[in-house]
Amino acid sequence: MSGRDWDERYKQGQSPWDTGSPCAEMVKALESGVVTPGHALDLGCGTGTNAIYLAQKGFEVTGVDVSQVAVEKARKKADKAGATILFMLAELPNLFLPGKVFDFVFDRGCFHSLKNDDRPRFAEMLAKLTKEGSLFFLLTGNAKEPREQGPPTMTEEEIRETFSGFFDLVWLRDFRFETTDAAPGPLGYSCLMRPRK
Image (tube, rainbow, N blue to C red):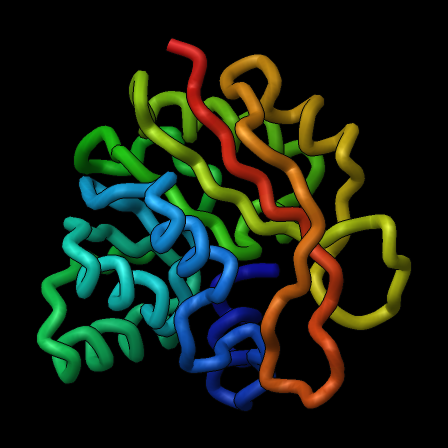
């Protein structure tokens, strides 16, 4: 989808992923001590909930999204929360994202929205944005549970094939996305990776 398509979804409230609470799977990773404060990049940051949580936990955060509507909402939310975050409007993958190398990169649903042809460039982009000791935390739709609604799905093999040239898996496990719907959230993969440097 284009940035305009995402803008429309946010304007019309068709954003069940935008729960207003930090992602429980990310919170668990931080609370476990596996992920520690540093420079963080939130890919597909949406309205900024996870970026704000990271900033409140001591991270220096950059949030990137393709939706101008989402980025504007994120800036307002961050200001209200007293969180200093750099929000950027960008289409991904983007091999020319300005800024720095990051200690922690978080993606809750950006990667699985890409076209198949863009996946290798996304992995290459991540390799340029990380260093030895960095962590990449990917939450993506899980093809073990076929469905018509919810995030696009991927197989474990597709994840490994895309990232194995640049990253080693720390874990790859099932989890459920939280949504604004009453039903249990869609099945996903929780993937933590370390770059090969």
